[in-house]
Length: 227
Image (cartoon, rainbow, N blue to C red; front, side, top):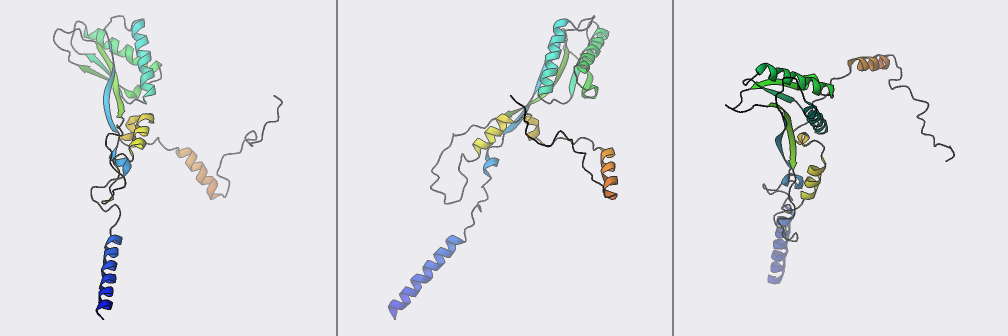
């Protein structure tokens, strides 16, 4: 009788132990995070700027070349607002204003929308030969460094995420993203095409096909031309 009681207690104790192990929820640790959240790329901004000396006659050929390259950089970076800062004090404030207008017109001729160019004045330092400042904010993603911490992945008593899990994904994303500013938030949507929307709704109400007409040349047929 005693042996039967002891065996019953042993089975009961084993059942309680297994139940305690099964009741541990994976990822229940409050400090646990997703692997991709452990190594989020940090986005910093730095000014991309060109300084132009004030000339009464306007932009020089070298300054026009520098502004042309600046516009290319701005386009590649999907840049936002461009600030043209004119010195409000100096030998010839009128020449500085004309210089700023020349720079603005040149940028517009290079494809920069006029609405994305802001003309402002600034107070230069005393005694300084104040230039015309043309610039925008350029965003840069800092690539996380992987492999700095290691530990045995065979010991996971707390269900913690490995110290390097997710680092490669975040690093590749930070290195390949075209515009790091997209990591800060979504872009604004372009205005909707109200005319096209109304046309589709009218066809839908009439039971007509709402898609565009099929192009006869876009039938996907394999070319049989002789090479």
